Amino acid sequence: MVTSIDTIKEYFPSLAGAQVSQMEALWDLYQEWNAKINVISRKDIDQLYLKHVLHSLSIAKYIRFVAGSEILDLGTGGGFPGIPMAIFFPDVKFHLIDGTAKKIRVVNEVVESLGLHNVKAEQIRAESLKKKYDFIITRAVAQMEQLRLWTQNKVKTKHSNPIPNGLIALKGGNLKEELKALPRGEFVEKVPISDFFKEDYFEEKYLIYLQL
Ligand code: SAH
Image 1 (spheres, rainbow, N blue to C red):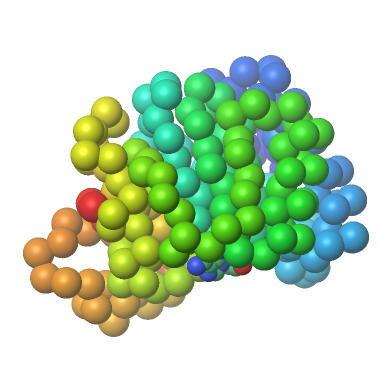
Image 2 (cartoon, rainbow, N blue to C red; image 1 turned 90 degrees about the vertical axis):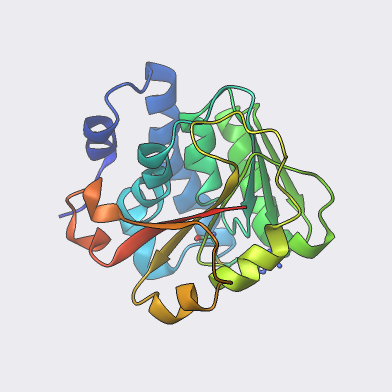
């Protein structure tokens, strides 16, 4: 069965009408843009709400960012998890970056069509970033130790959110070796996404929080 916008509404009943409309609009926008520039695997595009929107929103089940927070989406690709998160948190500022220009082009087109005012998309590599953020979010970009090295000097020292500033990565499969490669003493939390969503797709999928 194809997961639809109705599933998103069931898991997030607090979404306002305008946010639901934006979530609905993602369908046509990604069908259109993915046909021109491939940013989502063609075999996954029919599962946009399950594999991309709902998966991205697992972060919103883990943490409610306070208004005014600044969040970096590192390696956003076609806009995940950044775009669904920016729709969900209209009072939070999102910086979506990717090293590839054509991906940022798609993100900018989607952002403009949705009328999202809390997103800045930029073609830049993580290594070149100068700004600091409250949190870095990311999916399917690099191993935890690499992510840690890229982001350890990019979090603000002032903490304004329910948990200390850090990195939140969406990951799948066996993470044992990857987590072992982190230096000892780092605070890491591994949360099964199946704690939030019952769909089979989320078995063996995790949200990893690393305090920075
Ligand atoms: N987060 C998206 C895309 C994952 S693909 C999703 O889950 O759908 C990985 C993306 O990370 C690619 O678009 C690649 O260009 C980008 N990327 C990899 N290393 C990067 C770096 N150091 N800085 C910026 N972007 C990077």
